[in-house]
Amino acid sequence: MDLNIRGENIAVTPSLKEYAEKRIGKLEKYFGAPLAASARVNMRVHNKEQVIEVTIPIQGLLLRAEVGQEDMYAAIDLVVTKLERQIKKYKTKINRKSRQDTRQAIQTPGAGTLTQTTAAAGQKTEADAPEIVRRKSFVLKPMTAKEAILQMEMLGHTFFVFNNADNGETSVVYERKDGRYGLIDQE
Image (cartoon, one colour):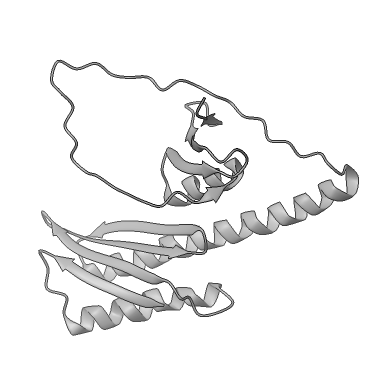
């Protein structure tokens, strides 16, 4: 795995860089082959807190974790622990899904439809015009609603935009207040 380490308001010393490479590089043990992905590591200082953000794009999955501590070395250890939890959770869900799909295929072939809930997005009205403080762009990958929910949970977000493999349209899955999920499709 190739690491792209950069610092904001902090000098990335050789020892700090070496420690980050060593700790984050150990995540490769969870995958069968060496990762061809390029992980982005951003270290920054915000007030008195030292924050590390790690993003690893791999095979249709995006692993991301951010941790803030008073010591950057402790933050690196915590972010690696957080990423390990995400990887284990993802692998458990994949294994469970494959076993469940196999059981369903044996018991009732052709079953296994996904129930979908659609809801309209609410809008807040303000006297002032809304200000965009951050802009992100990404590639929409074709995936099912279940895969999008898994990706959303891995990122720790409350919604996820994706290219729906079922209909080829752009869709959004979101987490509802009751803990269930909603799906917004285009008309």
